[in-house]
Every structure is written in structure tokens, then in C-alpha cells.
Length: 260
Length: 260
Image (cartoon, rainbow over all chains, first blue to last red):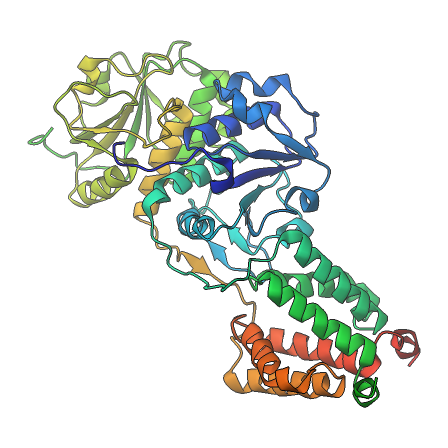
């Protein structure tokens, strides 16, 4: 359409991450949908049938550059380590305290985040099982496609198509929310991961995760809480300083420390 | 189509009309997309492989009612004879004096037309050849999906999905953002203040705010960080638990605590 803006530059468009994709045909459909709407960067986490997969070629309808440049990762954590804004698509109502947004709202947000220099990614789960809770926790925001209540099951090709479509349509959207970050940058996933592990280590040592049978749930809650805070890199350093100070010096050690 | 009489049993959703569809799989994808977004009535004009077609079943993912109720016609003219508002999808720029609209604009229009009691239909062409000029002439309005200029080819399943999706969104009241908070409530200011004072007390005792001349700035940073996190009351309790655990028990006390 005349007047539409579009970008093919990989750094300014969202990364599509397929977690444990099964059918090669579906990966081909995904590549086609990405090419239709100006997305380029595809990441595959543990594709069931390996990669490259010849079954993806025909359904890609010629979007070979997307398939040729696709990268394979062992885990979702590794696939998102360099990203600083992460969305996860889910059909199910999860009991997780994260904002659930429509694809259209997500697309507007993503345009704003890209304009701020953030690297945006969208996680899509396997055809049958979707994303695990531990994978969903990686994302700040969940995306659910509003659909007919009696038939909400949307396949991976359709889900990518709708997200890519909304991304493209939002091409001239003004961001509704901007976080003025001064000289700071949004925390990268690996910085967040460092914070979580630091915190979990100290909390484990301090006996926070009790009783044991509740520990995994508590751990996810703590991650989820900080994940959705949209932290800057400086925030991560501040939080790690807080954890370190409390863990090492505790309540009564301050005076001693002041005398160091 | 203006001036046609309305049927008494007018449906309240658009009719999807596939003209000379080829692959049965694609008809199945169309049925699934229709069911996802609350459409029911499918019409097939001269399907290449006849009808019913077993190849459509698996891709329909259980949207069997759409396939079972599909009707077959010999020509596009016959398939649209009872409709009073007609759209035709086309990827190509036709030299035809008709409005060309986006799917989103079309969806808004269709909602209005249905509210007026009109029977709405959308024509989709064959996979390879699209609609003939004689078929396009049947419609008042052409719909083109805005897409990346170098890769505009969208298949019939994708085209129906996007139209059905936009139709549904145009009538859907799903809020753009929902934060599922469980039974939790947003933290009140006094709960936040309690958290801040708790944290500041423990951080002061642990010697965090050093050097003294930077303490007021550091204190403001810590408050600001937590203030913008949009915390729930449960989050405040979790954070106070973290602070307490680290401050009282610290790194080495966890084992002792476990034995309590």
C-alpha cells in the first residue's frame, strides 16, 4: 500500500523464536508469513526433526532467506539471551501474574520498543504443548489472540502470521507508553538471568524457599515478579547490590562494615 | 448489490466463498480459521477435487461443522446471488474503478452492514490464479492485505485467516491489556511505604548506603525502582520476605535455619 513504511533490517524488526517446533511444513509457513510482513530473523529451539529440514521449503513459497538464515539453539534461554523485550504467545489462561495483551496492543508496544533501540523477540510454543511455565517466565508480556470461545486453538503458522501482520500494520503507530531511560539501557536477558541466579543462590542459602515442595513455585514467582518490571541495566546492578549487601552483611554487620 | 431484498433468516456473520479452490488441505485450513473467529458459512465454487474432500479434514483441526455445512456452486454468480454486500480479495493492483480497502477497514464496514441486516460475503480466488475480472466485478469493494512489497503473495488459508481475524477483532470487547492478579490487589501506598522503610532500615544496618554523601541519592533510586514496578499486595509481602530472609539469616545461616 502506498505510504506504508516497512523495514527489512533485522535489527529493527522482531525476532521470531519457535520453541520445539515439530512439523517442518509449519516452519515453512512461518517463514512465508514472516517474509509477507517484513520479518527476517528466525530462531529455532530444539526443532524435533533437526535443521535444515527439506519439508520447510515448499510451504515457505520462496522465502528462502528466512530459512537459510535461521539459527538453532538448545534452549529458549540461550535463544533469547541477547534480547531486551520479550513476548510469549499462549492460548491458555495461565496462573501467572504477567500482563496479557492482544496482538494489536503488543504490536504497538513493539514498535515503541524498537524505536527505543530495544531488541524484541516473540516466543511461540510447540504445536501440541505450547510453552512451559519456565519458558513463559522468560517473557515480560503474554500475548493471547482473542478468538471464538469454543474454538481457540490456533496453530503455530497462524499465530506467527497474526503477530507479523499486526507488527506490519502498526508501522506508523505512535507508542502509547515510553520509559525515559536516561543514559541507561534495558537489561538484557543474560543480565536478568544473572540477577535471578544471584538472588536464588542467596535466598536458598538463607532458607527462603521453604517448604521444599513449594520451592519451584516460589522460584517462578520471584522470577516472574522481577521479569515483568522492565528493568534497566542500572536497575539490575542496584538490585544485585541490595541482595549482596543483605546476604553478606545482614542486619547486624553494618556497623562492622562501616569500620572496614 | 444495493437494492436486493434481505433474507428473513439473514445470518449475522460473513459468508466465505472460495472460487475454484485446489488443495483440499487449504479448504481445511480455511475451515479452521473460520471456526477460530466465529464464522460458519462456507461456499465452494467448482472445487477442483470435488466435495466432500477427505484431505480437508485433518487441517480443519476439528472444525467439522464448517466442512459438513459447506455448499457447492457451479459459478461465483450463483454462490453470491442471495448476498447484499460483497467483498473480493486481491493481491494484484487491478485496473478497475472500485474502492480498494484494508482488511481492517473492510471488517469495520462489514460490522456496520450486518447491523443493517445485510448479508455479507467475501470472495477468495484460486491459489494460483486468483479471481477473474468477471468475478471481481461482482463485488463492490476490493480488499488487499498490506504486505512487504517484495513478498506480497498470501495463500488462501492466510487470506481467510486475516479477514476472519479482523472481523472478530472489530466486534470484540477483549481489553488490550489484562493483568491477571489472582486474588491479589494493587499495593496501597502505605504498603509500599512499609516496604521502603523496611528495606531502608535493613540496608542501612547492612551498610548499603555508602558513602554517606551519596546516601540520599541512593535512597531515592531504590524507592524509584520499586515504585514503578506496579506491585501487587502479594508482591510487597514477597519482597519483604526476601529482605527479611537475607537480612536476618544471610548467606551462611540457611542451614542453621533449616534445623530450627
